[in-house]
Amino acid sequence: VTATDATAFGRNYFNRYSAPETEEDEFADERAEILEEAAALKKSAVDYMHPEVGVTATDATLFGRNYFNRYSAPETEEDEFADERTEIMEEAAALKKSAVDYMHPEVGVTATDAT
Image 1 (cartoon, rainbow, N blue to C red):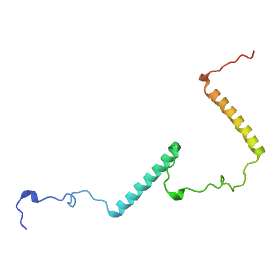
Image 2: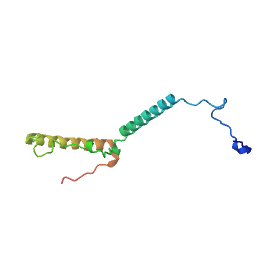
Image 3: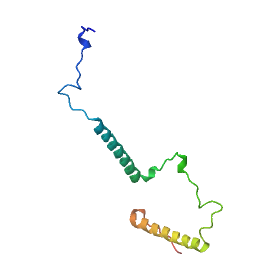
Image 4: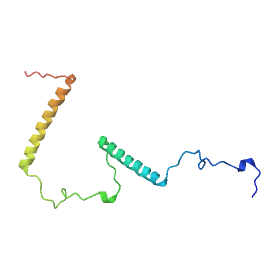
């Protein structure tokens, strides 16, 4: 084949002696693995720092049976424990209200006349 057109010839900039060295396949594979691990770590960090985002699952194997609410499950809490738990929750709500009132003095105090 004889070519006389000047545009038919080109210079290979990748194999010339002054070209920057290219990365070997082994190093390129290792770099790709490291970047994948970094992306996975970043995703874990974002998931940890933002729990409000939630979890999305579409795999059928991720769903399980709830053994605590099935009809054949034994009763888990007795009445006296339920009453005690209710009292504890009421006390916790009162403590939370006190803490909110302490941390937010700008809310103000409302007075009611006892007479």
